[in-house]
Image (cartoon, rainbow, N blue to C red):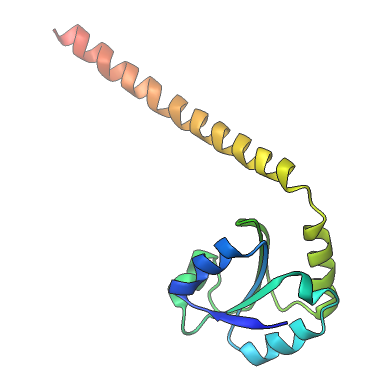
Length: 140
């Protein structure tokens, strides 16, 4: 089990190549490595660490400013994000739960939400476009 330090340039490739990636955003890599090594089932996932002081823009993408936060990706989808320091038992339970999820169902739900958001955006755009075209027609 190994924790890989992640930076702006290595973060997205790590997410892309990992089936399940557990990332802690914090100041201290050594503390996270110690806790990660004590996680039951630690070998089932990949581990990464982002130094919040050195990688400010990357941490900000996940809303992490100063405190620790844990983010878990599965098949490039964020399935867990919570601020605070997680102990080995918490991380082990999260990993077990996330590894047991039916990703086909989750991906279908994500696609459905994207479609709903697109439909909502189109509803917002269409009345404006309609009003603009009516005002041009009336002016002519």
